[in-house]
Image (cartoon, rainbow, N blue to C red; front, side, top):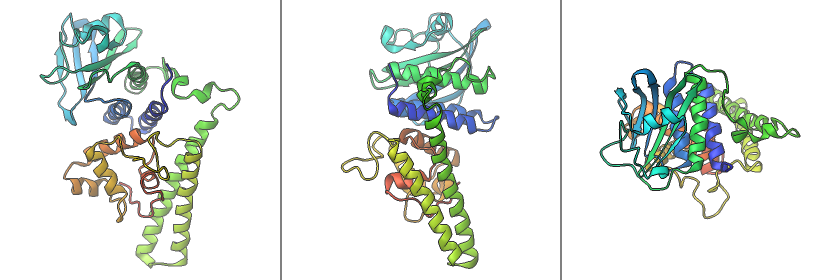
Length: 332
């Protein structure tokens, strides 16, 4: 089955975040995978696990459950549970295959309440299964074939980045980048995507320069021209994105009766409200102070927001929500 446009946007965003993350920043890699999975389906719990088959050891470097991060650890997985089955079969596990029977045996991730749906995919090398990506949901029948397909692709990204296997090994690039299989326009859409992102970033940089000059010299013809340049960058970028149909399926500015933030959580909406507020983007530190949360949590919410909305830069939120580019972006 082909992936939906929303799923493709989420996976492409995860690919970009992982590609741009610092080599030592494995947390961002795992976080990007969770944000992508959460943008595709209702995911309540998500984990990344590393496997050592020889002594049946499983380590959890990343655990996220019901809106909070959990402390990981190393355990011995049982011979009859879902971990043992995935390791032996080297195939993804679906809750629907056995109505969760395997999930509830051996070592299981989650709290005391049984999950209503689950999907677990392996990271496979020539030596065997070296890791797992797992998504669990409290909503029955919410993690279907598309989620398994997306998790398999994300597992390939994790292998490429964290486990230092050959670049793009095992990844079906055509699943997320179908334009690469189109000999008539190979790479064209990717190039346009990159141009749109570059315009957004250029507009933000011009705006930062404008603010610096305004603080030093006040309003001047140079400041006015920089304001115009910044606005024009965002307008061109928004035009490209709109004409290519890259906005989220649930709507954008100018589509009456739709809420572009419909799929966001209340906390994610609060973050967007601060970024797009009349005072301008206060940056991660300002958002953290306003919401009484840590800056790391702000980054997590922002990554999830961008993945769900199919955006690549926080400055794009203003034209999506309000229909105009930001002139007060402070970054962070």
